Image (cartoon, rainbow, N blue to C red; front, side):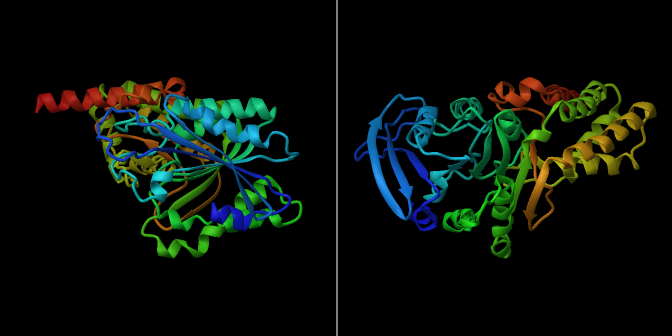
Length: 361
């Protein structure tokens, strides 16, 4: 809040909703117990913070607390709309290092975070309330830079800033971000690019860091058709010719992974697949050649998603959920991405092929 206040001005209205679990004294720690939550609302304008409300709730849909920020701001004239979602657990340094944060990664013992469905719901409702596409969403959340989350937001948001890896929360300075708005007539995309540039001076301090600006308008039918052609073909042949299984496992193993090893760099995966077609011996050469051609075309489509990217290790800006065994978490098939792509089919065929190979050994 202090950073937001310091970066505020008289031409930038900021509405803040803080939604956090209430730690009550003497309360027993029970895995599946739904704790009450405290919802606080603030207005920030011209270096002044005003607390609007505070309430204790038990059962309110988590999306409603996010939408309430818009209700505060709806009477303020504005040409552009910027939404930031911050992981408070991370800021308190209480994040569970084995549990990713958002979207498909909602595997917490209690329902503490936005699921893929909730994220889609809140962004879609904001779009409808605004009667225009949201200019920029900033996910200040570990491991949020993945195709699954980007795909879920594609109809309602123009561009997305997100992080492929876990990172020190202190690298994000909201006062500096808001100062960028003080430039006269700054366009939303220029504002987003400038945010990415702000990280330059702090990257050397980070062990592993990757931040991206993704053009969500490029996640279209051309992209999806290209992706599906590749992985429907691989899935169909992975258990018919052993070379395709070796090709897949080798490529995955050679691709950059993150703090959660189930995620790999998606553009890096394409490049590794392409490179490995040169060394693999396959009886079904015609199918392999077709997949290689689709991969090369698909890489050109995929790289157009990335507007800007800053990293200090081998990443390209967007990740994908790719567990080594092919076995997915229970919530995955209910994500927007899984419901619209051939990726779950490919993972299912990979899982079956690996299990069959294990049984035959």
